[in-house]
Image (cartoon, protein in one colour):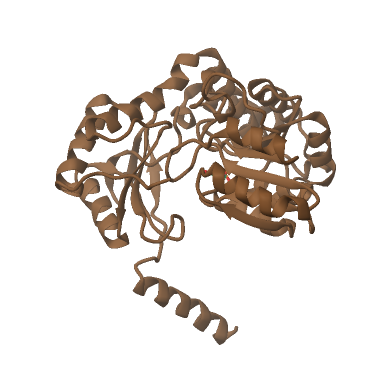
Length: 394
Ligand SMILES: *Cc1c(COP(=O)(O)O)cnc(C)c1O
């Protein structure tokens, strides 16, 4: 046993403790569509990404149970060996249809999708341009690819153009990548304008729609469809772990790109296929999303009820941040709300930039209006206490 290893780990922990940045797991039992049991208390959760409350839906539970009875609990191997059970291509066809692409590849998770897809397309001598607020797994994927990676200022098309002017000519291929809906801020990327820029500079555009599918764009088709027309996004990735209610990741793209992923993407090839129950649940979720387009609009409407009551700009997605800046203040605010029966998790650096610690609220289809109003009033009185609410400047 290595003493130096434990000393190293303890030293890191002590440092994080001293900065108020140590994180700890808290067992949380999800006991209903919006209710959780945590630390012996029942709380109304405003921190689950289960925007349509489908993780607890009887139809999804039944589909998962049926799949287990029919196909077992595990897929048994990588999809390229024996793990490609019949529910996987069925789900891929459904996702491709929803996203309006030729084909789709389902992978282990959203994280595995980004860290696999980007290095499959990009390599040394290529250029990756990512929004500075992109999810961590996009940045990791860019690094793994060994392409030159630059970050453009959040949603700043002028800066993106500047970087393209400066670097595009000196590189082979170029990928522009961004969250479609920003996970910690809830705003949308200007995907239509980005698609124009990508075309102008012979670049490919990839969006991460983890928080878009099921809740944004007509019928919950995602950020590519926000604003009513389909943007020319080459690579639409996302997760099955949020509005879709279960677990898994996907990439929707042309047939050639998907065929390439299925033969070269390391996180697909060297990782076991998703279990049948998970895939069956995702298919049942898409049945609900496609069968009831009104339901998919509800989380954003709930978020807008909240932003209106607090005098904030209208929510564009189910995610609303309340920026408090300081980590200690944020964690104290979380505690205040928890004492009143609401679970709202504080988010600190390095998940968000230094000085922008915040409460991150997520609204779901089945949140009661009375709870939303009460929470907004509580935040106004006890957390902001007269301060002007503000949002991060773009
Ligand atoms: C949650 C999230 C992911 C990761 O998806 P998982 O399926 O949970 O691994 C990727 N990108 C964004 C923007 C996310 O919010």
